[in-house]
Image 1 (cartoon, rainbow, N blue to C red):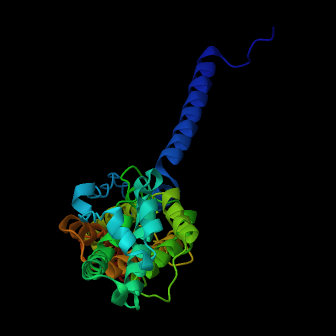
Image 2 (image 1 turned 30 degrees about the vertical axis):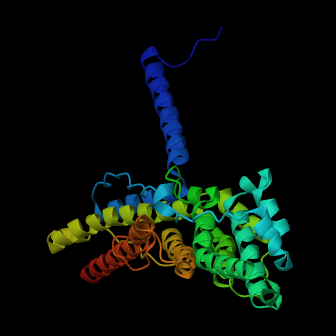
Image 3 (image 1 turned 180 degrees about the vertical axis):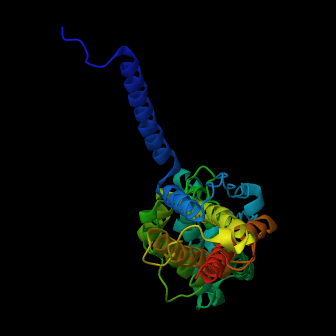
Amino acid sequence: MERSRFPSSDRGRVTCLGRGMLLAVVLTLMAGCGEGESEALLGDYQQRLAESLGVEVPDRASPDNIGAFPEQDERLFEVAETREGMLDVYALRGCHIAQLVAGRNNQLGRVAPPSQRWLYELELWRLLSDCWNSDVPSTLSGDSRERLSRLTAIKTEQLPRVSWNALFASEEWVKNFSRASSPLAPEGLDEARQRGAALTYLREATLHQFDPDWTPDSATLEGHFKTLQERPFSAEMLRTLLLAEQRLDEASSLIEGALARSDGETCPGAVAPLTDSTPLGAWLQRLDRSARHWLGAIDALLDAQVAPPPAVAEYRHRWLSLTHPEAPLPAFTEAREHHEALRARLAHRCQ
């Protein structure tokens, strides 16, 4: 067998070098898989910025997770069950509600998802309302007429809360804010507008539930809930904003340190412009646009609903607000503007 031409000491160094290079490659691949593309994009920017300023790359801290979505008993309204005997319902047969009530009381009706329970309550209210505003009440006995009036008033008062519960009791909506989520990959930002159609439809359904000219469609409604179920897009968007805010703040600290040095040490190298044509600049612009579209659609949907329970109002203020300074979107906007202002100061000093 031919022996190696390298001396034993050189063979050892080559072996160590090869193992070291392999380890570096493996660690790089593992880091890329664990961090995600958006994290890698922000980390690369920090690396290049640190090299331009002649400083060490900052230690990257883990961004905070989003808050826990309110528990069921904190986010739902209590809606009292309306119970009427079958003879009393039969007395209102001119209102055509008997078959609907019987369907609601069977096994399938009792386990129907929240969205289908809302459709049931909506149809029941419409039948009662149409009946009350027809000639039927004049044909009823006094007791039956009073019962029809009472049921119509109860269902009218309950419907907005039932509509709220249909959304906030649904597994699809709750899981959309799952804390077991990760930041969006860059291409995931483009899904905001497509997925936003689900939020728009739910808002329209809420606004038009008392409109007799609007007809709900069960298949369309369930299709939009399925869109919400496909991935926790709300949570992913919020976590992307938190990640971007954290990394921009860390990058800003590098520039602040450079600006604090004497003029001769501030500009060791040229700092490339951060424009919309650069990878990070384009990503930040897309993140801002997508987050505003998605969170704006959630805001519009919640505005169409009844005033929320306190726990939901608090969650909305802290995590979904478009204006509260500590909410993810305004905090990201402030971090981005602060970073751009620091870069402008640095560019002016280094002219």
